[in-house]
Length: 114
Image 1 (cartoon, rainbow, N blue to C red):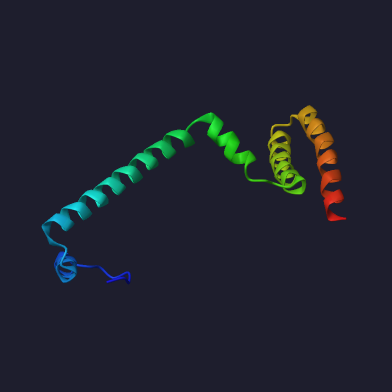
Image 2 (cartoon, rainbow, N blue to C red; image 1 turned 90 degrees about the vertical axis):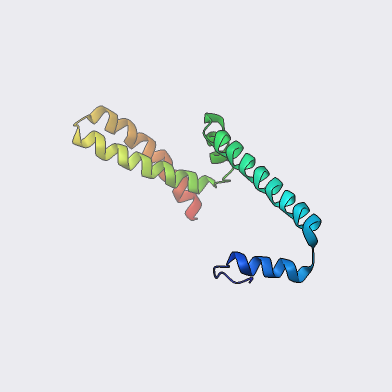
């Protein structure tokens, strides 16, 4: 019964009867199972609530422990996307600002490759 195959209620009851737990033991087991399921559901609800907060997102992002090079790669990807967007919209002043930032990011990336 420990593999990933489906188990019928009869198989479960047969196993319980083999253990000779009795009604009292069965009730105690049921209480423990329900209690654990309620705790898990409470934890899941709490986790969902916390993850939806703005602070959780920023803390989780900073907890990734990204290196300076990994941060620079992410920044470069963002800047390249913005550069394409601004070129299509012919906003060349913004492109010039982004190009200046790309120079800084490229320095970080070159430093990491040495």
